[in-house]
Image 1 (cartoon, rainbow, N blue to C red):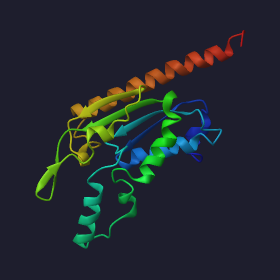
Image 2: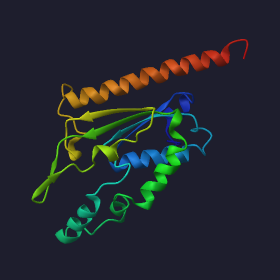
Image 3: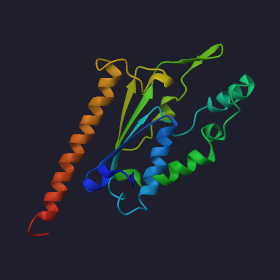
Image 4: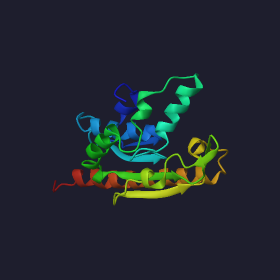
Length: 189
């Protein structure tokens, strides 16, 4: 983001992050780190989470076992960080929770079960996909975990749900930004 020419042309424009699954955890960590970079400290103003395992997933350990047994890939350390109750996830949550009150937050959760071997499950249960913060808007998407960020067409109801939320957030941030900039320019301030 530091090297993007679009970021430097309008240094006051708000940034909205969008993260799917583990990418949502990366977005939270990026926001925490941005608070130490003056040029970005106040720019990230909204985060969208799509099936993000904020509290981990009971199926992370299963996925690692499947990878190891299959012989196609070895187990992955970062998947272990996604298990329910992992220290890494908890640390990110603790740091983010202290700073997130001024953000617009949108959390989308999956509702369709995926096949895992001979059973089916939700990869990220609603209780893990939702933060529970007062500034969070929560919405379900009628999709499986793998498909929650893939849309069939502009007529896809899931696409419209996410698009409408993005439009709403953008409008809110632009109005708030204009009001804030106007306040700073007024003669009394």
